[in-house]
Length: 146
Ligand code: ADP
Ligand code: MG
Image 1: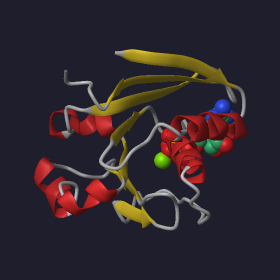
Image 2: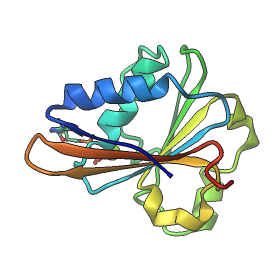
Image 3: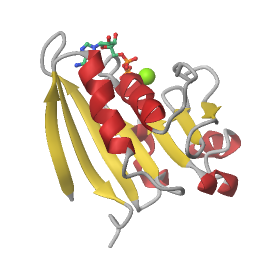
Image 4: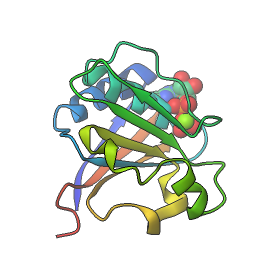
């Protein structure tokens, strides 16, 4: 289900869109982020963090696989699975840890492991439409699997 499509014209605008999106987030939700390198996935996660009230700077977890951010209205678990080779490695990285149900999980490069994602999830795709223009589509949701 496609919920909305929007166009942004700066990183700040993408962050603000993500802050608004974060208002609807509840513990246990999963957000799959897709899009090329430099599309703005990490910028979007930064906005989600701000929207949840997390003050720490959000860095790409490419080398750590997962970063946890506390201090907001719920924890944020931020994965980047770009470098992972298999679903087994996902498991080793803590991707299926049930303890994360107390917060929201966001995953960059989710399209690489579509089969491994929970059925109920938000699907967010970011595409560059110019140096500073991005098209962001938001679909799915907690009842996406029906
Ligand atoms: P990804 O995580 O998808 O690889 P990043 O979020 O790390 O991408 O980087 C996106 C880059 O694109 C940043 O350098 C950011 O400043 C730039 N950018 C330019 N315009 C936008 C926009 N409208 N939205 C998001 N990022 C933008
Ligand atoms: Mg990134």
